[in-house]
Image (cartoon, rainbow, N blue to C red; front, side, top):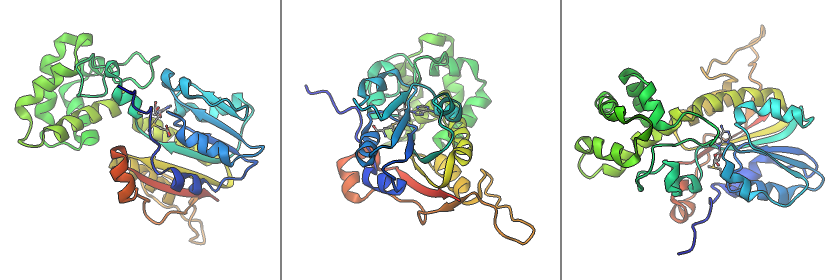
Length: 301
Ligand SMILES: C[S@@+](CC[C@H](N)C(=O)[O-])C[C@H]1O[C@@H](n2cnc3c(N)ncnc32)[C@H](O)[C@@H]1O
């Protein structure tokens, strides 16, 4: 059987348009993955440069043969420091296409998917020591319940948390199959997929501290982007999208728009997209991964 594509880029044309690319500018794709977005950016560049981040070792296999391109195999939460190492202090645009790639979901041993029985791993970076199995072992029932409630948007999070702790003595050897089996009695009729997906999504977001990395990257974007530089973010979860929305319209995560002495707003960004930009029905039909995508665009003032 033919191997599935590493990843089909979501909102490709809309996001590249959103970057408003200067052919001689410097751009950052903080979520390289299969490189679909990066290759489209490179097509628009002349003497410009593209730096990309991905913390997954597997993404290295997709690096294009192009001397205007550099892959930095690190977490994008350190974007500013790593760009400095390459002598870059200011850029013309930043693209983030958050979450995991289809490749990560499709590789059984990565432990992201409940379609396979495999170790409960879920690390985006193979260098990280924290697997999902260890995360369950290290967390209290209350901590797990909070994660399930916030990142999985689940009802009954307390019960699921108690169940996860009850199988946790297996510690680092816990598997995806054992989690699915343990939560089976709680699964609402006809909603098994959604329920399991919520549990797995919550654990994944927590294990990889996806919200913390997003916040750090957004804060750095304010210092790194040139005036007129664009920030384009595609998110797949309402909590991420809310952070991005607040940050773009207020310059902080509390949506607290500060004003100067004369009442002039002090937001460092101007929003370019009105509301969020969502995939078309056609894209959703062709790519199920697109369904929950929400994209927002802002320009640094
Ligand atoms: C949705 S995929 C991006 C797909 C890509 N736009 C493409 O066209 O193929 C997200 C990628 O970002 C990476 N990633 C997610 N969070 C990251 C982080 N904090 N630091 C570095 N890479 C991250 C994941 O490993 C994954 O490969």
